Image 1 (cartoon, rainbow, N blue to C red):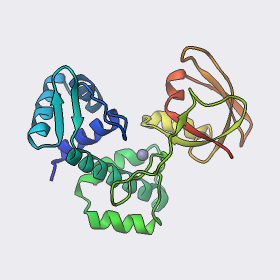
Image 2 (cartoon, protein in one colour; image 1 turned 180 degrees about the vertical axis):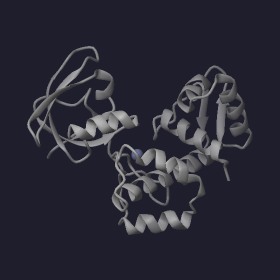
Image 3 (cartoon, helix red, strand yellow; image 1 turned 45 degrees about the vertical axis):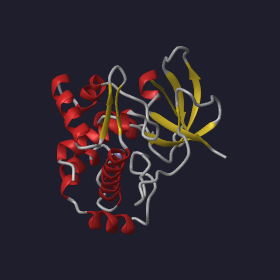
Image 4 (tube, rainbow, N blue to C red; image 1 turned 45 degrees about the horizontal axis):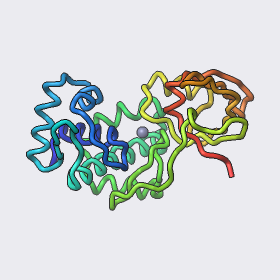
Length: 222
Ligand SMILES: [Zn+2]
């Protein structure tokens, strides 16, 4: 079994490699993502390689082995089921669930996770809209489109907000931008600039930075 900090690294690497692809990433990226110095990331990378969970290739970087990926996905599954449980059953707001789950996730058994999943009737997305892997580690299919790519002038349903900080989630939530809400993209500045959108529910327009627009995923309403 991975230790708490090994689990955090595995999950960070899984997210960096694009969740379902296997790109190589650099140790520097891992350090950034986990929030540690490059030397500590390097020594953890070495440790994960020795455990057989990571491949390391000179000039290319690292990526998860099959076993490392399975462990990472299980960690993600646990995290997202706990978040959903805290938000749905206990009513904890979406900007606070991540921090609460970080304190709980390493001590909850698989059995409790499976019971929570059942009690929630097998959800496929967490409160942020992130897909929840099933018991076999499979992710629900479909690619999410973000606001930097989405078509203009049609109604779009918000499906996910990717890895936003609590204050950003809070800001978005107050403006009605959450999974399930409908928005309408009015304009987008070129070269990754801001987007102007309207929240359909209360007919309010607002501008969102190009950066943030890449974290908000939507789906065309059929
Ligand atoms: Zn989440």
